[in-house]
Length: 246
Image 1 (cartoon, rainbow, N blue to C red):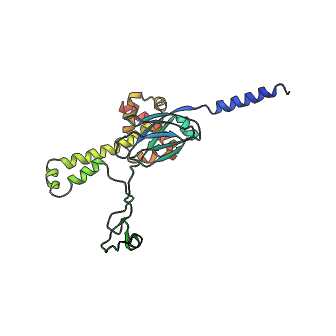
Image 2 (cartoon, one colour):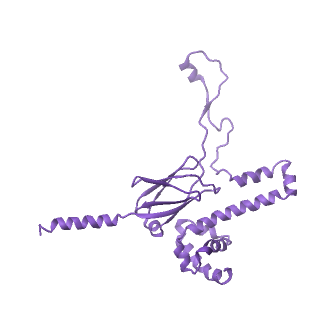
Image 3 (tube, rainbow, N blue to C red):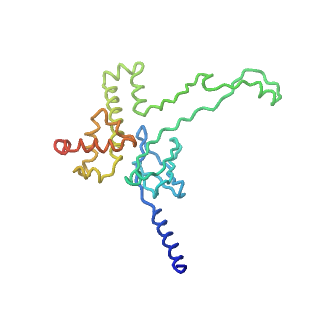
């Protein structure tokens, strides 16, 4: 029994190693305005990292309970813990929010300085952003198309842009941009193999998701917490699409 003890230890250690075997996780980064920059993607657990391509796609090795950190100059940092569900799908969709740099407090004074630095610093009134009229809001900044639409809808530009159809064109572009982001999220929420089970060819997956996105309630199924409802929704829509949409 003593002779076999080292073999038992080796066997248990082998099982532990197998249990921690890393898997390749694919994913895609989404941003509110659709502009994808180079994002630093770091597995804080394994101390490894990567970055995304121009389409926002990335690959990184993970195991359950690893923590991924997504960071860049343009967007707020986001940490995601790898769960069994994420690992089972082998695909992760990450939405990043544009970083808003708030102004630091500024000091404004019209008083006369005495020359005594310690005393003068105490006498200088310190004002916050609100005190000097800068807006302080948690509302996300507008996208590039929304900014163009605001400009086109103000002042004398309103009349000319209404006549030449520019406002109508920008409104349509903004609507298309929102729809495209919904479809991106809906397409990346589940692996290609799931859509193949629904008899939808690989080159028709995005068209199928567009078909589903015509439903005004489609966006409510996209959060991770409602993934099972999204699966059921796709299964319900697939027969109609296969019969009519293709």
